[in-house]
Length: 445
Image (cartoon, rainbow, N blue to C red; front, side):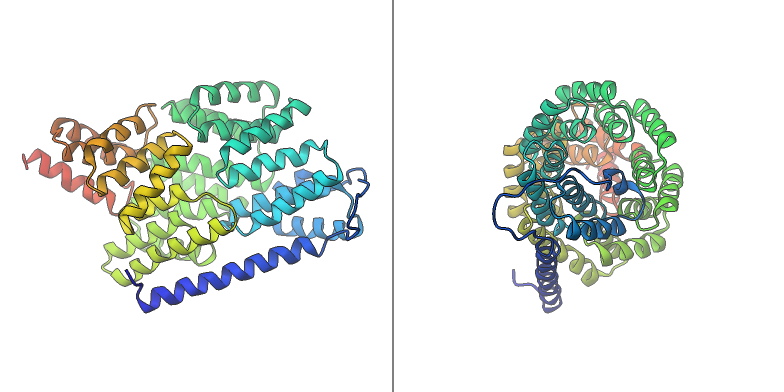
């Protein structure tokens, strides 16, 4: 389908932004090149500490690192810290153009000092951020051979195992990490592993412990946002809003908290505040999740063209992400299944499932199969998505709709009802569809 003129203009603008981002990235790292063209001798790590990454002003920390490296270009420790800073900046600001910068900085660090655990751990974090979880696991294991107590590698190892769908191994890795290096990064991973098994109480307790131990603004914002997401997943919007307020008090620009607050506002019925908040988010960081959420809120208000513009921008973000080495198939599958090219959604979901078997990829594949009319096959994956006990209203909704399509009316009523009981505002459009489908089922239609 040929995009409307306005969509084409927006996609073109996104391409320009991509070119600017890539150019800026090459300047940022290239300007710091030591320029000797041969073997260099590494200097000892400087006083520039990785702890500065959670000090509250990541941009200032990066500027400080860049200034330091102009005068000390052989400081392998600071190159590794700069690489990690770029990874963190991409994560918190939704800017995948930082990943090539991170890659260059980390490789520079390893060129200066190959036996460099901080840079190896940084490569594990970078690979995970790009959704290359096999490489993330490889780099994490290599780091832990040098230092079994490396906190970042321990955390990245849990992340990789979770995202590869190896949940039993992830639980063991989380226990090991907790034994070796208890702290905010490990606590949050430990909590998520428990949440995936449906143990919400333990997840909440561990996150509360993490928040109590957090002091740096970045840590407070991160953990409070995790608590907000956990509360939102259970339909406890007031508690979620309280946690997001705590996160934004620590860092008023923290993207996950801004997005989470808007979702909780939408679910609470404050649609105007939600739209205002999401407009702020996507104007700065147009990621697929908030773009789709905002588009659906526009649809509810009858603003079809504005909604279509948000959905079109998902494709622009996907192109930018892929240009910077990010595997975006899961994002593509989820957005396109409801608001884009359904055949492309299924291709992306199948490709992602071939790489990793997680509850999220199972759900995405189930829904992509459903919208393409392959409901019998979809049901197998919908059941897998809900098999671990992970409490997701979206997963339950998808399973209920697929069960209805395959003639399992009683199961469909059970799962649609469970979705709405768990989180009645889980999606601006999906929640309404779930209520309509349940009403039709109860009426015998």
